[in-house]
Amino acid sequence: MRPPVSRPRPISLAAALAVALPAVSVSTAQAQESAGQPLILKSVKQLHQTKRKDARPAMALSADRITSEMDQTSTAEGDVQLRYGGMLLKSKTLRYDYPQDLATAEGEVELSQNGAVLRGPKLELFVDKFEGQLESPTYFFAATGGSGSAKALHFLGDQRMRADEATYSTCPVSDKGEQDLQDAKAGKKGQRDWELVTSSLNLDFDAGEGVAKDAVVRFLGVPILAAPSLSFPLGDQPKSGLLPPNVNIDNRSGVEYSQPFYWSIAPNRDATITPFIMTRRAPAWTASSATWSPVIAARSTTRCCRTTA
Image 1 (spheres, rainbow, N blue to C red):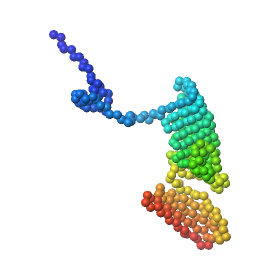
Image 2: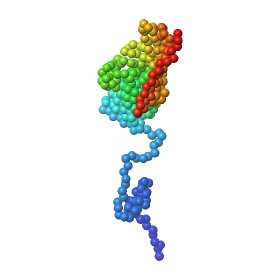
Image 3: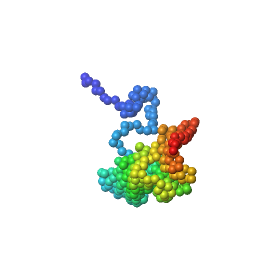
């Protein structure tokens, strides 16, 4: 007598899905199958997966005309748009070098990222490292409300840049309000009430600090303060440092010079200390402090320590 032959039984759809999908337990699948119920899968809004450290955002290039060499270069002409993560680059022409990850854009270049809008005639940018140079740029930073222009703008990473022969101001161009804000975003130049003119401007948005070399502060086009180096905050948190000096002349005190110093003690506390000298009176100083809270806003002012002549 021949021994019985063991034949494989066909596997059910529910069992196959239970093996393929770890999120669905075998016991649940078998229970639903035995009860004669169809297998129900739950939808999720986001696919959960482990991110690779070397993963890069998707890149999308669109234009009126695009010619490409496989894994070498792509050349785009007419209404060019290059998207990479949160970055949007627009220009008339663009050449992308795949091995170098280098984008060269020319003609009405506009680069938008992290709320910043930068414009210029030519851009060279290593896209993933966000390093490169924009020639003769105008810029607007939504995070600070600051804008200006420069001879060249060097990108030193996603949150750092350096501008050569640059201007910077958070003031509107004139007294036209919102229209000036739109002009600044559009790269139009104009006369501001306050403006910082510098040979080199370093902006570090991670640290929230800007540093200007060979800086001159102009008010209505007139230079009022010069310094080899000036630093200023790029965020909402104030920065301790010297404020513009005051000079007064009258018949009683003669010439009076005061130099205020701003002290950022804490996010909700600050103080201003102002020593001053007068040609016809003794030196003195004033101090004022302020504290803010959701319920109480208080400020105190003290005038003291006047020396005797």
